[in-house]
Image (tube, rainbow, N blue to C red; front, side, top):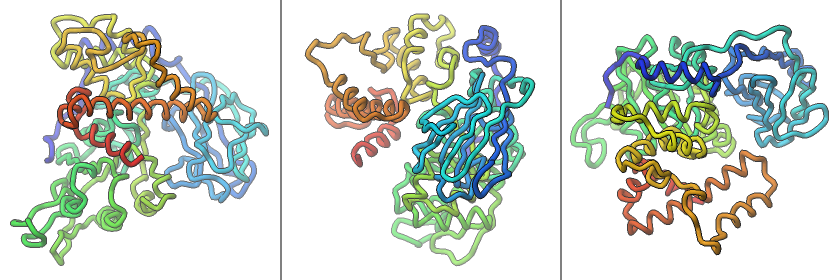
Length: 465
């Protein structure tokens, strides 16, 4: 259902105090300015192309042959998403994205490296030269939120200027990020700050509708067009007319429906199931996904032309574990919002929150604060979290060590190794909580502190594996 238009949220006095403290103490804040770099193609078929890399760019810039890459190359030996470039306080961080032919800096293969300028970066048959710009770069934005998105970390504050530009435009945008990073919140904030703010904001979740009903839900249907269609019904495109449509988890959309979605976006018209006529619609489309759509394209599960049409704008939300200083800030915000105004959040709980990896990101933090308030306890166990130091285990328990040893033996890059350990933990956690509640998904999800829909997503993921 469409939500009522609302004005962008403004921080309360207490929130402003929290945010000012974060910026003043440097907890999660950047230096007054960051260095700038120029990345130039000096060898290969795209010689002469260059990219000015400063804070006007997204937090992470992709280099490759995909339409989603900020620096797009035509070199066929370069992967679709070959390497990422990220501006840090002192250098340019380069990360190989599991490319086919590897990434080399001054002849040495790298997984991740920090470049200070003067290096040659080789990807496929293309050579990039990294040059440090003279003088200080522009000061980092002092904005501490964008609409309903709250965060004073460098990682978030560098996103806000890009979000403001995207909100003022009418282009499609792909919002990427792990589950629970706030993709829907960002989409609504883009809508609220856009010229369409007085129109409807409609969310369509590709995982929440049975596959045989997705076409009808998107485009509508006529009476009698299929069994159970007792009356005509609008689809979400018609519901969002004059406003914004967020297609959540678009990576789950059946490949056979993707051409129809592409037509609806390109021609601004839809055809109801069972109808021979086309209906004009005026809709801005945003898409959110936790999947790597480039990999889905390569695997044949997502159409390249649809991806190209959607990824005109792109925002990648960082995971909570990468947002330095934002965990205590968000925890205090949730504590007050959930009714904890009569007492401050216990410092011990904040300390423990700071030590946790937050695989469920902001959604998990929100649920953890909710559980801690409801149970009146500051232990991680009561907040729905666990940590070995908090729950002594028998000396004979060696399963977790065995899993870690198995992952270490694979010699993977740190991000992939961490991901595999988290996957193993999630799988065992789901198995245990389901056994405890006799396979009852509703009770198991409630006990886990996550929404039933996301519990089902995790369960399905590990069933497939």
